Figure 1 (tube, rainbow, N blue to C red):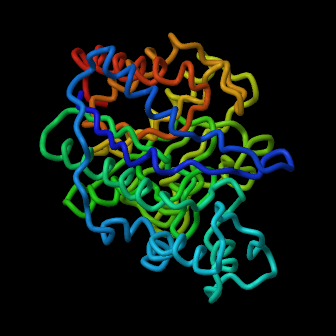
Figure 2 (figure 1 turned 90 degrees about the vertical axis):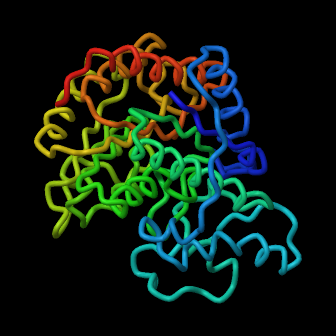
Length: 349
């Protein structure tokens, strides 16, 4: 399996507001570098850089003005005399206006964000655009005939919505890849999100569409971030009605319950008959993850990969969350090796 990786991710690492204090972000460069080291040690396959793409390819998953905001945010921030990381201080919630883009950078930071966990730094645009380009390169590789590929994206993307950053995410790498596949003529794409946290951004991007099925296994949002998205009754709207499946799971979920939910997902995917699978691969379902509360062991990630191989689909893996840095590389490689081992005998869904 080819892995696509960029060192540009190292240009982004900032602070977040967590537990009523400004702290270095859990989402740090060591995550991707550790995964890369494990990919190399496992001799998983070639490691290649992503190809640069025009930012216009991010539009469709995101709005043009949101992409422009990300490109310009650091320059706009520093033009006010600030030199530290930029975080929002107000959000257009409930009865506040959310249709007019503010003129000031302080206003735009809040207008285009959902939390204070996604800082804008000097290297943010370089990192997030390179991350999205990895997903685009990976999906094109699969469309060109590779059975699978791994986009080692950082920063992650599944919390980023059409006009929103949050949860360490800025550009929605998986959604950009899925949308690109549709533009390239793939009729039906499924995005499967196995990250502990619900991919609210991916859901939002495709919620009104019937050409991309979004399926997510995640911690119940009654108790877990992002809290306001990911409930089972969120099934799509308009043309997208019935094309969004959320499978929220309780605290302490271990492999057997996770496997059963994956079986439910497989049945829905089978009825959709997709031509491409994009996996938002989060391994923060790990039993020792510091900000999550599922109980998957390292060996369970092999089983996850084997199960996904059984779906018999061309597959792009896109890296999302996982914050136990000492174990993240091993767990990711376990998924990918399990997938490759299972793919040899896989039959299409």
